[in-house]
Image 1: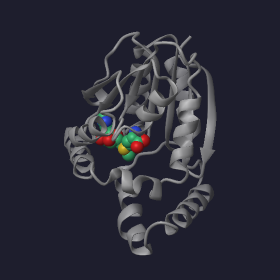
Image 2 (image 1 turned 120 degrees about the horizontal axis):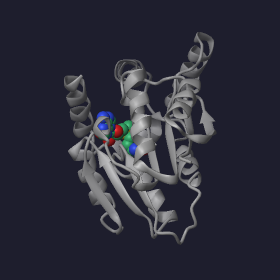
Image 3 (image 1 turned 45 degrees about the vertical axis):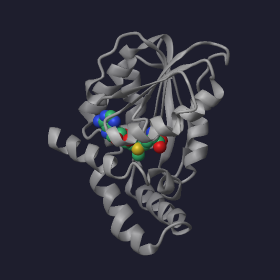
Image 4 (image 1 turned 30 degrees about the vertical axis):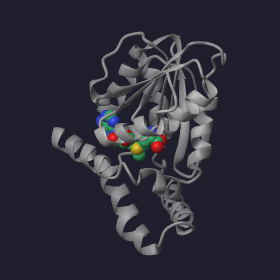
Length: 231
Ligand SMILES: C[S@@+](CC[C@H](N)C(=O)[O-])C[C@H]1O[C@@H](n2cnc3c(N)ncnc32)[C@H](O)[C@@H]1O
């Protein structure tokens, strides 16, 4: 397990400089998905809330959070040092941000955050047990009344939809990258490195962790934004 995590870290470390150039070309409606994530946070704009961005990468979600919640303090957590370094550089004009090098498998924080968000990161957790544990960690890390929303890749619930979504995803990528890149780079990489679970499992795991008012607030092909509230 540790070896796989190390590989993942290295792979994102290696592509930190080019990440922003490709992500919106291979993830359908990437910016719209992040917008939906940020819109789900229910607190007043003037409040000094504490937010954790899990797997912050180069900081795209944190930038949107700070544009909307100027008084928020955002903690950017990522396992890849180079991704964090790019985030720091890109967000150097924005205050109220801490950068933490860490792994979300080791997230042991208690009652600290008003909101925890994540984009395109938690599907890297490999097993269902670890995914459930992660939701328990997230629940514990929230204050009462805090919210968690995840914008991520999810698995289709059956083969028909799986094939349909894959074709729709390929169609989207064809607008931006070559067929050769799709077949030899993006699809194999997704099949090997990503571990999406069906949305209905996520909903059940969130409920088991204690979340209430769970909702799917956005969905497009295999991307979804969903989450709930810690009572
Ligand atoms: C596809 S990027 C998403 C970045 C950003 N959230 C965005 O929306 O553009 C996934 C990020 O999750 C991080 N990541 C993957 N596994 C992780 C783990 N176990 N702990 C912390 N970060 C992890 C990677 O280093 C990478 O920066």
